[in-house]
Length: 183
Image (cartoon, rainbow, N blue to C red; front, side, top):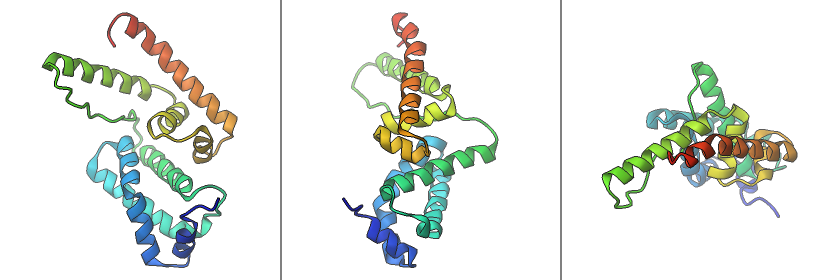
């Protein structure tokens, strides 16, 4: 099946600004959301997202169609976010969605949910970088194992292994807490 965006990216590679605008409009919310998960700063998110779309414009000719355009784009997003963190030379944990829906429960229940969410966030952040990326792509971004492999530039079995080890490490770290009723 032909990637529906392949014709658009071909036109972008020929310098078609209208097609580029169409791609940006189609993917901007997803790119912003993903970048925000990495940096947790709205203004920095906007700057990085703009840099990512500039990379897409400049590198459109390098898209070979071996994977879906969205996979190619997401690989640029992840690599750009990782480069950003390297440039800042300090480690930040990957923040998962911080918003906890107001379930209408008591203040104590909402605070307990927030504490559990923060504990899980910290535990995910403590995973090694490759496991953390694979887990976020698979569990939180909804990519298939095959897509995770393509985005990360690794084999399918390596992606499976990273995801399995990440989930296993989370389970090992969180099970004692669950048994002690902290989560």
